[in-house]
Amino acid sequence: MWDVHERLGGRHAESAVRAIEDRGADMLGIVLRTVQNAVRGIRMLPQREGQDMRSGAPAFGTPENAKANIASGQLARRYRLPYRTSNASSSNAADAQGAYETEMSLWGAILGHGNLIYHAAGWQEGGLTASFEKLVLNVEMLQMMIEFLKPIEVNEQELGFDAIKGVPTGGHFFGEPHTMERYEHAFYRPLVSNWQNYENWQLAGGKDATQRATDIWKQALKEYQEPAMDPGIREALDAYVAKRREQIGSEEP
Figure 1 (tube, rainbow, N blue to C red):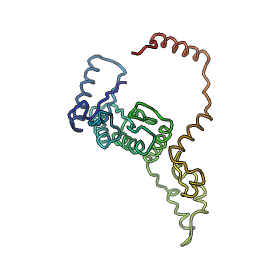
Figure 2: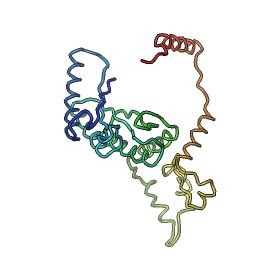
Figure 3: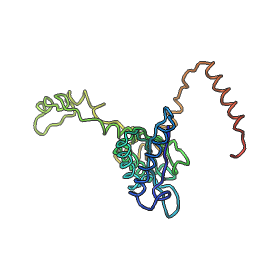
Figure 4: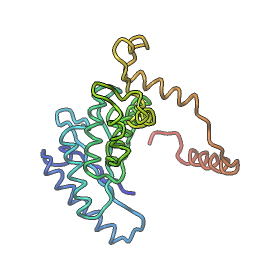
């Protein structure tokens, strides 16, 4: 798998459209070289990222980044290539900045029809670090996006005409069989979100989303059970790791 990794601004003229155009040329050049070399099994899944030209730091989850990811997806489909994109942010913490930048990246990936989303959960500090809290928050976002993309089902059961007929004017649906049969699974159930009112939220500890994410990953690790593995396979893997460590060495590259 090949990953063509470019930055808006840093490796192109200071223009989103110029960077996207250059990316198209990069894509075609790599495809031609791949065909000429007759390399089997290699696929090119391009993506776009941004760069802050004031500081030189990578910039993810920006409007330009999202638009470029959508346009790159169009180019990939034009050339009939699979498209690799990312769910990234530049925030140094699992905070509001990380959330809205990740949401922008995720929309760019979805609207660009990405075939593979790299770094889908946990990416932080422009990719220099990963965070358990960010991973949990991103899983929530991914689950919500998956649920959003499901088509709306329309049938007699979903429309609930019988339930409507059975409730008089001024009544409610809380005790209706239609409600009792469906209330636990009819709508998305969040992993992290808290829907309590303010008073009950305070009584429960007043934890924000990041703190709740900490509780979730700690509980997941506590409940984790290592999958069974054939002892022979484990020994072979351990031997391979030891051999590669010896070959690579411990000195700085």
